[in-house]
Image (cartoon, rainbow, N blue to C red):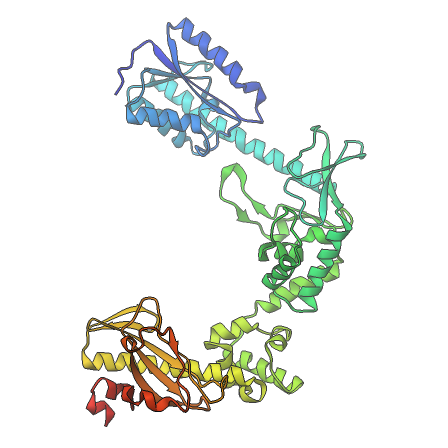
Length: 503
């Protein structure tokens, strides 16, 4: 800890952008005069330039001052501040008092140099400080109310209040007399306080993309993510020159500005509070404030479609939707499901543990599904059942088991992997591909072979990987299966020697 001296002082100055009459240079001049008058030597300077006094957030100067005092790394005995409002306009006056108390507890006095009282802890000083802190907080509240009313009036006059333009639109600066001055690029601001800002249409190519987005959503029934993926695949960038996301698509499909309507006061975040949405009846809306890109009817149609897609479908309603597709088209495909206006394929997969399972429950699976899809579904069922059977056998045998990865286990120190394979017709005879290489490496592969029709389990084998040291995989065929009979078992229970289960 440094040794502070009674005649050494630190300065704290703050200026927010809306109070230029309290510039930091002006404050420092007053504070240096005060220090000279009281025989103080200024040894430190803490500054917050362009920072609001409503909260401590972002005020690096005051935060550093408090950190230095709390850690003992200070060599001054007094902090000079211009006035109480420069210390802060905290909406809770106790917060302002707490930070001053943190200084006083460390033996550091706080002097408000431009105030008409001495901060000496007397009852009068305490009373005046409390009053001044309340006045500083109330000033911010009154200013916030005045600014909000002015923003509402300007919105009603057809001018926008901050924010980016968005894809397909541009911000234009308008003089006080109503003359269009220039288009504001990203990051640019109006150069005169009396100027106003409104919207103008962007490039024709961007407007065409917006119309395509509405068509893809309303006609092709694509989701926000699907639209974004298609635009990204085509190399079309958003307003920031980056890839599209579902959020950008949603903004285009729901924001009133694309129908020429100016909206203000959707949400509130006054006096550095948390942002909260406002009731629609408090919004300030101006119809036909500028040229529209899409009609109001199309925007409302897109909104209604979004509400409809958010419908909470029951299991029976989802399965009925599949049956309706089958009745109308005579088949059910992934594209027909996505374009039907009902739940998407992904919703069925999540709800029913796979689209194949959903089609089966709806009773429209086999007539409308391809053979490969049916086989994949059957193999998933076989794999699920064999995994359950394997874990049951391990538990019955009371083996020490450690699951290394999906369907890979260490049983009593021996690593095994369960592998269920379908019959393939890729060679001259029906065959099965058995992969031996695996990460992590295993000692044995429990090979479950499906029959030639891929309908059920034909045989189970326990393949020692050491017997095939140079093979990444093997291709047993219908003709070579006898070579593997020495590894064959009738069931997993027989493989584990569980005679009671076999019976």
